[in-house]
Length: 239
Image 1 (cartoon, rainbow, N blue to C red):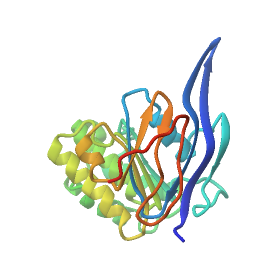
Image 2: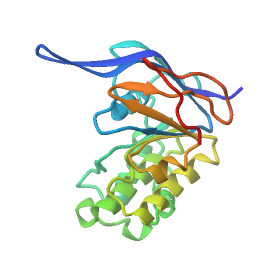
Image 3: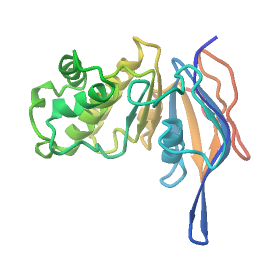
Image 4: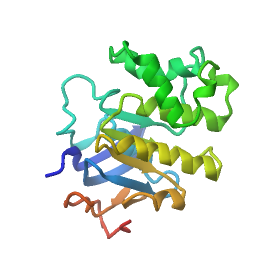
């Protein structure tokens, strides 16, 4: 049986501002297992980022249950078990490129080979020549690739990427996805990517559709069989 990295049961997220209520994610159930390659697609504001943040344990559901059976829940889930690439690079401006990539390792106490591993991750995304530069010396595309290197440096079991190629030209976007896919292969890690780019989505094995906070996604991967649903769930395109 495949390892279950994330399981959601009727997970929902509601935001309340004064008297206004926004249902960012209606109750949805889903499973992400080792080896999965999943694209989450949908228009801006459809709930993709909300779902990804819940999977990353960066936010808590308003209702429902989330579990990370194969990743464990003792202590923090990040940064060694889950790697996250945000829409914006979010680099620390006072640290060099290589120091930014080292940061998850140092936070986890893995300092012995932190520099060596950080440089290896930078080579994976083709940016080891700028290792000593500061973030404000980089282009937007370079900064985003540094963020990818930072997410993969700990060899996480689950990589969650929120529009990781949004600021990149097509060639660099393809190379960035190459790096993310390559980072998952040696360990059987799972990759979940939110994207507007249909060419990126086609490289994943499954596509989940988000629409106004509703998840439409049969969760049938190459290595496992399960279900994922939301209100009025329908079949999504298998890759």
